[in-house]
Length: 390
Ligand SMILES: Cc1cc2nc3c(=O)[nH]c(=O)nc-3n(C[C@H](O)[C@H](O)[C@H](O)COP(=O)(O)OP(=O)(O)OC[C@H]3O[C@@H](n4cnc5c(N)ncnc54)[C@H](O)[C@@H]3O)c2cc1C
Image (cartoon, rainbow, N blue to C red):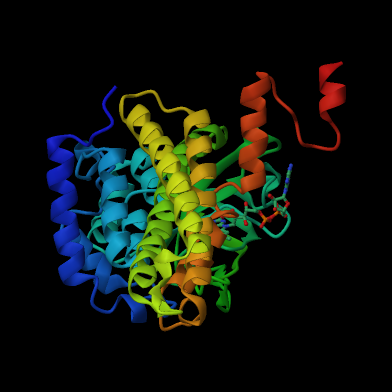
């Protein structure tokens, strides 16, 4: 067991840090308050080799590791929290599922622009009546000649306001086995991107409507039975979500630390008050322990031992640690922390969202309880745990 980064990882981290300090730190505050996807940052990140790290070379990516992508997210977030979303979008979530399961023709069509930071892909999984219970999704895909005809709607998609292509989970038939996915391009007849709404974190999302939307059959990503593959890809997504939560929390922690060292009240720097010292001690413990769980999940996944248990633990710990750090940073920085002149309130709002996205805190705890007891606890009303155990 070795708790240190390797020499290559240290050099990579240092290179990303230099890039982020020089090119992303200036303008970080303004960027956080702009709702749109920062394509300028995406193009810089692409030039720096930070998009497609987790995608194998044979599939058009850079052939790096999840751990490399985690390092990239951390270093970028410490200079510019909003820019870490770009590294996430280029390495985790729908882009990774897409690159993994796409045909050569699909990859040739969309991946170059995605990896160059010229376009972005959005995941359409959640629906008005299917959130945590994702398998209750109702959007249907009916075969019709050379096309699938899509009917249904999606909500909450990250980058849904700007995406060029959407990875849409849909139902080809009943049950979990009937779920798969198709790729839908913006502008496809019968597909409408609704008016943007805003999350608390400032991000915009648009409802997606499919009304007799004809999607060519060559846009099929995963047919019926694809849901399990899609959900296992979510394991990696959770590592990205966890990495951002933790990194953004660390950013806030660092700003609060600087503030406590320089801000004076009652003739002393704030860091000399024990009431604040203990906040830093508690946060250091939360951040460091979450960091270990995150690295363990990433390293094991890179070694071919991806485990839902590891990623669930990491996501829970990082979501909570990141949020607590950002929330306490506001308190430590007083009116300055609560103001949009400092980025810590933004960090708190961002971390708050990741406690819901990508598997909520509660769903992660349900998953952990199943590991603890070594049995499934079905959540559906028609099959409660007590009856399942009979
Ligand atoms: C910032 C952000 C980004 C997102 N990005 C995307 C995206 O890119 N694509 C996409 O498709 N969706 C996205 N989502 C949607 C996200 O996946 C859902 O919000 C999430 O799955 C929860 O679903 P819901 O909002 O419908 O809440 P519900 O499922 O209605 O849950 C409401 C509350 O009940 C709790 N709950 C539900 N069931 C249980 C249970 N069995 N046990 C205990 N508690 C339970 C939940 O944890 C939650 O606290 C995003 C959401 C956010 C906030």
